[in-house]
Length: 154
Image 1: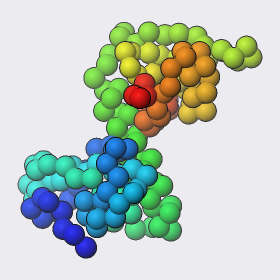
Image 2 (image 1 turned 120 degrees about the horizontal axis):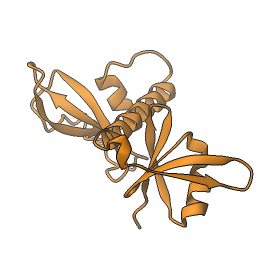
Image 3 (image 1 turned 135 degrees about the horizontal axis):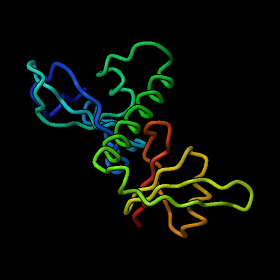
């Protein structure tokens, strides 16, 4: 097991998910679907940097003990995605979101847009969002009951 590049942090805080980095900085496993970005904290609770762990290593680092390995990994990934979505939405005031009604002809859905970011009531509207806008979107996570997306980069 390879040790983290940071000086023995006592605990971590979850920051988000990185779909670009696919190697765990803790154990060295590669070709992962994604890595969880953890903020390393020293004994005083000060941030000393961040690391990218695989889902299993992140679950262990955060003290997640209950459930099967897959359940722990799935839970950690979703929580990391939600933390990332919360950070993205946090800096944008409600008045800055453009409210647009999108529909597939059956049920209209209110979507909120701000630059490269979109919020919808649920994750199941990704296909509708892409069809109406003509742009590919990437699911980030959930924030306060809404699915958060960013425009996909080619």
